[in-house]
Length: 99
Image (cartoon, rainbow, N blue to C red; front, side):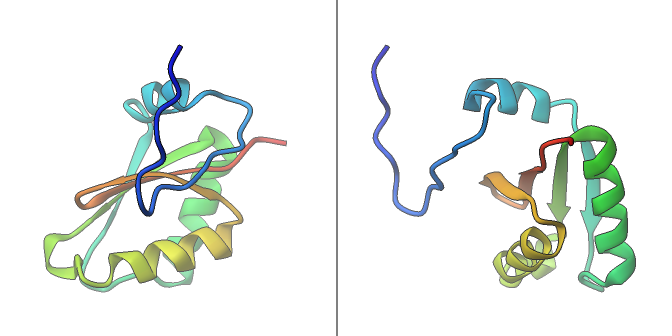
């Protein structure tokens, strides 16, 4: 099996599941839509609740806030103690291991 080169801006994962397994799970992960109102405490609490029950959550951002999505993702990852798995277009996948 060949090792893939790390692309610029790509995060190195140190998770117990392989990247392929995580991405397969992400296909069936719960999606939370984030609109022009952005994120607030209620959105963060809902994401925490879903991470607790599902481990993987997809965040879908509205097209009109695409310039702010990286800021939102950073805030969400910090406040939920999760890891960013993948980000493509307006969709991000975050992961938090169940305890």
